[in-house]
Length: 362
Image (cartoon, rainbow, N blue to C red; front, side, top):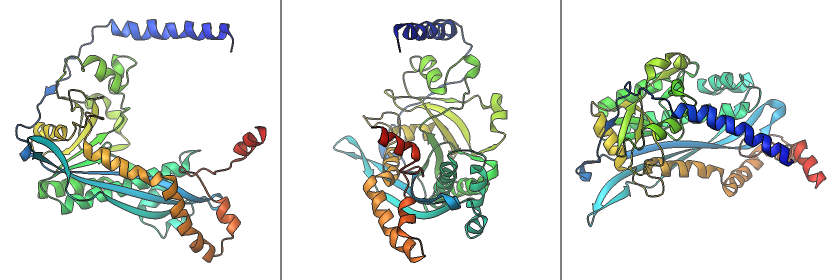
């Protein structure tokens, strides 16, 4: 790359900067359609409900591409926190050890295999087939969310008087038929006096496109962050975007919330059931969102994410691979077939021809 190329890049970036962003910044946006609601932390932290959080992850172990078949390990992590006041200080206290449920599954595009598995696998396979690449990752993600949703369903049935937090939005693809699971979760929450919400790490809903080329995060930070420095929630303008949700079931009302005065960002919060106490729900979630390193995001989901992602630690992956080698040999697979089936975390071969060529070229 020479100086001429660099200058060309700079000239084009000036266009982006001055003709797009600056021109939008000068507009007088009418934000009257929004009704930001400020709220406070609980007056008495002793009255805050426990918060139970769920997150999941997966790791591929082996691939048998001739059969379009993968073996994957799934992990669902569950945290159960409460707030205690000790010597006048707020402390987050685990009401039990971090729970992690590990399951092996075969992800296969072969009908004979799918016929032996729950319906969720056939539905996930149909969804994954729509993609030309990364099919196994789409398949695995659909199964992972299925396991998370079933875990939430069980918790909603067995726990009471708590806040149940899901990782991510409370939406489901219609063709995956998850609506009965969410209906059960919400029914159970009503019976057992649980509140239910989902908090998304990232959001790409594009609800604010009509105001210019702004992502959700950029728009909220730019136009609401300074104006509303305290805790605030805003209901999303969902009525203007019904077409976006034609393929989805929504299982609650959609909000964006700033849950700490020092929040790193506004988070999308889907409220499935609040028992008629919406402000109190946000207030209590915010009470768990005062972690100094990640202000504005609930500690239960932080720890659940950390636990779930540990399934991708190399040593753990290797341990589970070793556990599978002998059973795979016992069904007649040759050692070389098993070694050739070793894949990375996302189900891709460790040694593609491209990687071999790169090594040869060193």
